[in-house]
Amino acid sequence: QVRLVESGGGSVQAGRSLSLSCAGSGIIFGTKCTGWFRQAPGKAREWVAAIGSRNPYGSGSTYYADSVKGRFAISRDSPTNTVTLRMNDLKPEDTAMYYCATQRGGSFCVRSGSDRLDYDQWGQGTQVTVSS
Image (cartoon, rainbow, N blue to C red; front, side):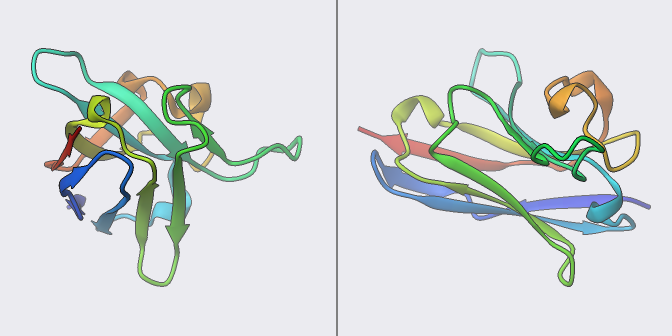
């Protein structure tokens, strides 16, 4: 049985940093495209970042939404089977519940990992609140 567990959320002031972790059991992140999504109250769940295997053309294996590019970094640690989202220079608009998820396919990220409909395993989420 696949289980994804997020941790690391909290309340911080704008400009500070947080690191979110996603621990997996029953799944090996190295074999799956893994993404982070977020959902603010009253808003649709939006894609944040994804990590997968390097594609055959040699381009990068990490992908980011424009709203977080340059501030967030996604990484994967194989020995601990965790995926981390490092969030720097946080803004109030980053306030949301953050979820990790894995795509139903293999390690390459379909559609750069940006479409939530490509994901079939989800964690329960961790709350991030950024105050101004």
